[in-house]
Length: 360
Image (cartoon, rainbow, N blue to C red; front, side, top):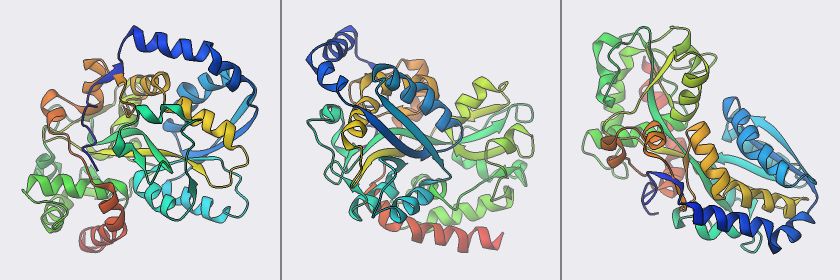
């Protein structure tokens, strides 16, 4: 897999030429073909603020362009729950499109849950980098959300600048760290890098550092979530996702601050896939084509602070900084071999639970 951030740290629409070309394609012959598509597209995906923003910035604009296609969005607690639902419905799927984490998408594709996208219908596949096209286009990356350190702006006047700050004794009992999921899986390679270790060789150094962080953790299961405990002042720091935190900072009084450590982070990649035997495959692929296009990708990045994947999208510096951090952090941005990580995912979480969480 090639570097996730290659040619993709700062993105937005590359200029009026791209916009004009997109408008021409929409208003020309392609529109006549697309306009004949009717039906209902049923999507299952992430919950909460993500769901609200996906509805607002992706689904609603799509419906405005294609009024004969209705779209429903079912919220799921996490990707494991989504995969369980898709597996249960396998013989008679009621879902057409699933939005899930890349590690889970790799498993779903290999298990035959997803079907290969038709490049004649999802024409923007040509604009997606090779790393984003999984298992012969059975799932495609559509956004990236960086792991970050959130902080309470009332109680933390000098925000953390490094992942090493999580071990500072001044934060004893003041950190929320839900690490028994993808957050933990992504944090391990980050901490390994700090220790000069390749995560493909060993995660022992990362686990040792987690053990140093553990005395500072007041809860491994922040309730109701890793954002609310910061807003309420229950903790000073929380290890969580950047995109939702940036949105909450802007919409809920700035109580949540977001620190992007100078050593860089790793983007949790979100994917979109067409369910095998979908009854609405034509309309669903039209939606996927829109969701992966420059218009939708740029809007979702600028409004929700999720990194875009479409190679023709370029972001203004100010937006890129809120997604990836400083220029120093952007240059240090890391990538993962997700095929490797998908195989290790469960074992890594088991080790975090057994060797760190259970003992603290």
